[in-house]
Image (cartoon, rainbow, N blue to C red; front, side, top):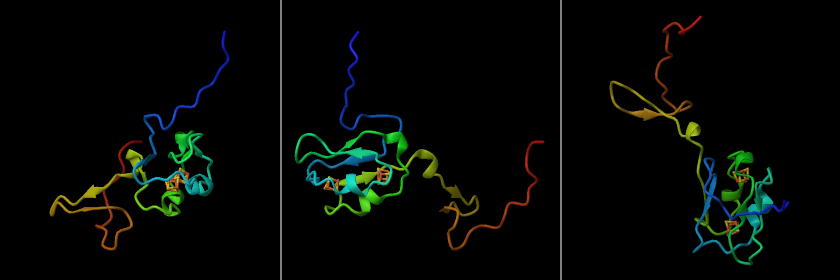
Length: 113
Ligand code: SF4
Ligand code: SF4
């Protein structure tokens, strides 16, 4: 029985949080150092994008994107539940909670016991 562990660069997972544009990223690892959750590790190949080693630990804080000195080199993919929005039936207008002109509160009684 072999007890070996392997790191695979940026695997496709259900929770893929960050994608890199290999044409723009220069592998400077600024994002690795910015990440407060230790999600990223430097790529062993110099000049290549970092490895997203722990995608499930991502806080979706955006520090890695905000601190990147090469705009467009990395992009955050928000989880589906954070992309949620609402639509006004009357106008078809979409909005998110916290917007300037939120719709009136829902006065219907809660469903369930
Ligand atoms: S994504 Fe940006 S900060 Fe991260 S290694 Fe690439 S160029 Fe550097
Ligand atoms: S969004 Fe935040 S926690 Fe997630 S990889 Fe970027 S810096 Fe790390």
